[in-house]
Image 1 (cartoon, one colour):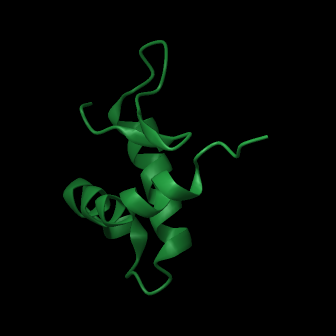
Image 2 (image 1 turned 120 degrees about the vertical axis):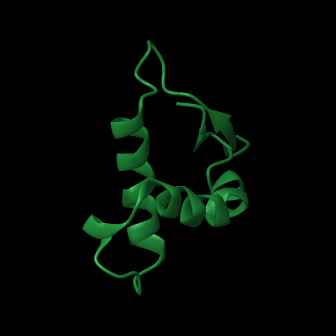
Amino acid sequence: MRTPLVRHGSDAKLPDGCHRMVPVHSEMLLQITRDFNGLPDVRELRACEIRYFYESLRNELREGSKPKPK
């Protein structure tokens, strides 16, 4: 899986070989359903549609997940 997730303000891949389609798309799907409440039935979204909606959130997720200075 090439598509990175946003973690701690930057793009990241899941560790230990876990960066595979099901875990990555599951996390993306959870995020887009949280932020886009007007989506059609999410069980019918194709992988390319999940990535499309997630990409539209990427900059916001980077800003929102940056570590806070102490």
